Length: 494
Image 1 (cartoon, rainbow, N blue to C red):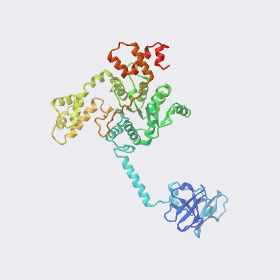
Image 2: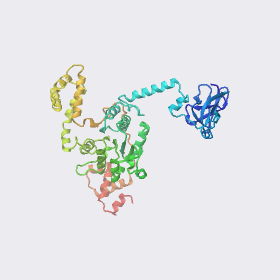
Image 3: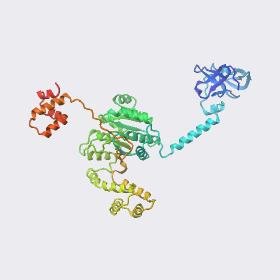
Image 4: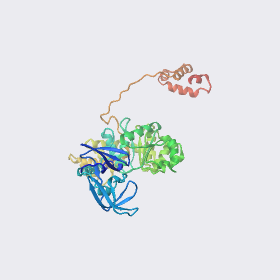
């Protein structure tokens, strides 16, 4: 269609600009002015993304002054269209409205309007969008959907854990990889997959105060997950808009101190209907059967109200077996309900681990190992499975895998605990200690001198200890000296 000054066109890519008017035409380019927004656009004459606006008899059109015309006839002269019809406000007939007087605020946003206005995309564009949606749908149904969106290297051991845990409904696990093996990435991949698959919608991250911003940045940079950071100020502001401030956001990060120092705040957190709880540095949750720490009690209250729980720690037994049992108790209180029973079961785990390793390494199972497996599984139909697993048949791997699954599901921490070590994972750089000599603080120097005066007859090993561990001397002397004494003043640098 030839372009003429005064014609009305609409942009296919920027429909919000409204109706445009042709104000300039040259050999190669045309200029459209959009009065509704006061903007101009320059287009090429050929293959430009604009559509001619032509109304049909029976349509109702708007004049730029505000009145409407019911179109009964259309005339075209020198490329300009004039609409003839009845003016609705006055009833006057045979009113002529040139297209240049059309209301410029007209937009075609609904599919029906665009179709009737002739705003139809090219067929190849539709085919491209159709194929894109088709491939996107197919990717969504792949078993590893949600694991490939991370902005990080796809490392096998991280993918294995994320896939194993992310496929579960309301997973409750302890991620205990050694330092530097990527627990944060694993947790993020699990969160990402849970959100994309619809298994979770509301996520709460409880982390140490000094790691809040690190988690906030990692979730945004690597997974494009925009968490909200809650502190005292944000809590107070949100309290003005809602009775429960934590219901104003879907994904929340807060510190462990923030959670446990206020009883009302903890109750609001516990009642906020979270689907997944993630606790970083979980080894700080100390527990004793008689006197559990306030931090542990706070997380326990949350874990009792939230279906999915991820605990992260690089040192699961740093505070002893009792605290390790306490963290497992948070995940499954029915299974890990009695500490002495847990210790007794621990004694048999070595034999189970040896049996599993023999199955994994395709080793021939000795008679004592076979008897152990019979006792552990204790099923009537176990004999055919044992014979097939211990045969030379090439298909024995299926039987061995089934035996491993049975042993894992019934004994030990099984699928509740995941731990990788640097010795087992290949490809990580070897860590080298680079010692840096620091000056000895003046308080420690004074403590060594005072210790030498007080204990002139000390044994050699005690003197060596004083030199190697001056902080212990400082702590001991600081506790023994009377307040205001000469020596304690010297230790404190007064």
